[in-house]
Length: 148
Length: 77
Image (cartoon, chains in turn green, blue):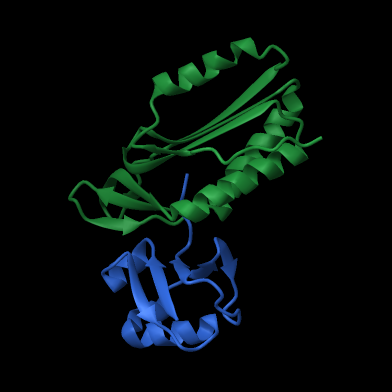
C-alpha cells in the first residue's frame, strides 16, 4: 500500500546549520523500527577559477517546478526502496564556502537500502530540480555554476 | 494570448528581467523562441530548456499554459 504524501517544503533560507542536522537525527530516536540512517551533506567548495576563488554560492530556483520535482523524487524513491522516512533540505539565497547547502537524510530498517536510496535521491536532485547556483568570487564578480 | 515568460540563472542576466508578459498569437514553443531570439539575440547561443506545467517540453510542443519558463542547465546541490 502506498501512502499519500503531501509535498513538503524543501527550501531553507541560507545555510543548513549543523544544529538543524543534529536535531533532525535526534528526532528519529522515537522511530525504533529504523536500523540504518544515511546522510548526504552538500558543502559549498572554494573552487579556484582563473585565479579567482569562490567565496559563496547564491541559490535561486523555479520554486513551483522545483517543489513538484522534489515531490516526484520522494515518491519514486519510496516506491523503489524500503525506506521508513526521507528528508530533503536545499538552501536558497547565499551560502558561504564551507557551509552546507543540501541535506538529504534517508532511514530504513536495513543498511543496504539506505546506501542505494541516498545515491539515487542525490543524483535525481542534481539532474531534475531547477535550482541555480551563482558562484560569487572574493572580488564580488560571479559566474553561473554548472554541475559536473 | 498573453504569456508570462520566466527567465532563470544566466538567462535573466541576458533579458534583464526575471519575468515578463508578452502577447503571443502563434501556437508552438519553437515559434515563441523565434520571437524571443528577435528580442534577445544572445539567447540563441545559450543552452536552455523550456518548461510548461512544471515539465520540460520539446520545441515542437504546443503552448497550452500561459506560464512558460526558460531553464538553463540545473546546478543545485
